[in-house]
Length: 335
Image (cartoon, rainbow, N blue to C red; front, side, top):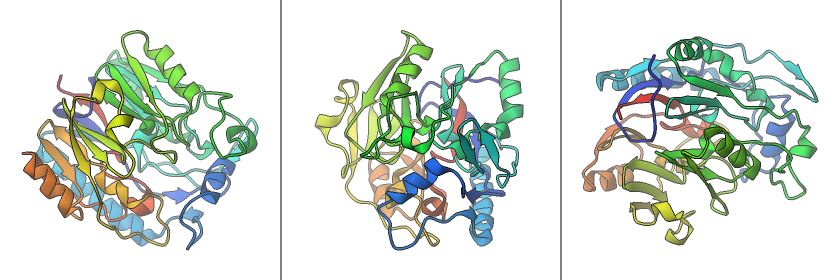
């Protein structure tokens, strides 16, 4: 297995696509429950336990369609092993059940020939990477450097400060806080990534890479509903969160496609993601982008910029908290 992926847009060769079998929302993860307390959505409570089976069945069907679309473009698609997320884990100073395998990009970061299991926020996701055991073994056998970051065992009152911001007592970040631009990595400081995490990542990668900490942009979670890199020189930007002044210097001269508004998308019972998950797109190559068909304005704008748009629906991207970029993890892109 060849691991080689330096950015978000080179021609895609091999990818991991997530899975929803046995998915559930954690009951016993105190960190997860603390984040849920501060959700802007108050009309229905954050669900706990098994996810509605009809939601999972439809999503499983749509993921299989997504897999076929990728294969039709010549992409090799790998899927995670199915885990029993109902099992609970007693760790040092924490206790949690599991979550899901829907979003591999939340947990694993590929930088060139290096794969990093990041020090994720939620205790309920600490053992999720066991689903990629065979992939990890094959990658290491082929010469890939596979690193597992130290994961925090902090109780919730040591994870967040009085203002519900992450403390800096230990490195914490989800892989989905990072967007790759070759030797430049854009790192979103948010509720799922602290400065200590960026410093750890910079140290591990060495002087060849620059980790740019992006602050005061989007405080809640991941980076890829705020900015997406479509190809070298072109970025997609959430205008409600980003201004040109807020962009790091290395992106100032890039072509900017601004998304002024996003279409409303349905969800079941509780929205784990905002409507902005609709701009969570995946580039197959520098001119081909997978987009949710429920975003006609975004599709029209991308087509105007001469992109080929491939519509793939993920009906419950809001319910489950993941769009096309989230539910995939590219292992190999043609340099």
